[in-house]
Length: 433
Image 1 (cartoon, rainbow, N blue to C red):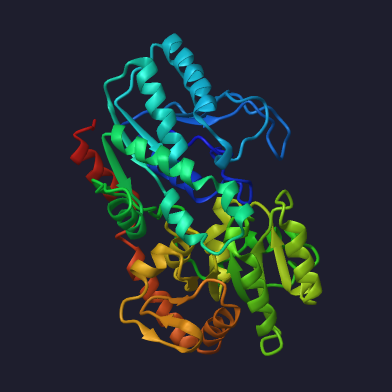
Image 2 (image 1 turned 45 degrees about the vertical axis):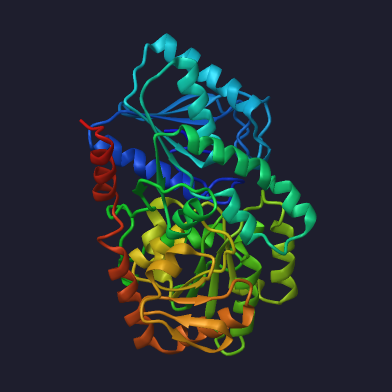
């Protein structure tokens, strides 16, 4: 398993650069493969200090005797964002991996790579080791799709993304991999229309129902102490409050400013509403978002969260009246999917494939470009008024909110579960235990 960029660990810390949904996906898929009889080695770039602890990210981290993360060196001793990775760095990582695997005399049955850099690393490693095994690529996102979503951004932002270089790498990857697994309808459509390639598999993010499930708010216990510890200024007074939740890494594409502004518009009419918001202090946009919160005069009503323990996610969703994701760039929309699996009503942007593809049956058009589906509401990305209006309708109509939450759950479970999806792909690959 290759997830090369970002900070990959067994416990994913939300908010770190280039770290988020893909990392959760990789761990869940790895756990599923172990449950089906495989041993899994996950490759991730290391050789630089951990951004939180400062410890050097190196060596091997074992989850158990069946799964491990191997941190590869290459490209120096500093973090490299995914847009700045190149084949020279990836070749050094492949050399490091080969050295370790040769010494172990390890054998493999299958390579699964993630994102373009993971796929290139997989190609290089297979060639250097002269391995004749199948290589499946899961792109999660595509350069052409992201470029289209970034239309209208500044020239500097677009140039920093290096879209043309990435698209060329992706075209090369498609010539060499044995199969591609799409994670959304948008990915499939872009592969077919822009790259001229039809993916063989559909393997969207799925739910681990042993860890993510609906619970009653009355059964919440540990989450209250967590909120009060994370944000003593705003997190101690939640028990009897309505809650709006947004969980994602602190990145400009997540458009946290939209949910902050929408929340501020709702407060005069809903003074007991609280916004639970993940904000990483390590992000370059953290000061800007905090300034916005303070300027709007809502600091004591916004509970700022850092890394949320996975074990607390069901309790956090249980506190949530409405889950909101205004993100303008998503490969699938795992946070919205998880909220649905915990029986939450959701308001999403129109850039979230999961919401667009699975929550909008029986669409009813509303004002401010709000689409009311049977299982969720969708608003055009960046439309603050639209988000505020959609959230308010759900807050004020409890029966409607509960019906939408129930439909969201039914649209997610049991279809989006890992064992059935993974087993189907392995059978088609004729790889199994």
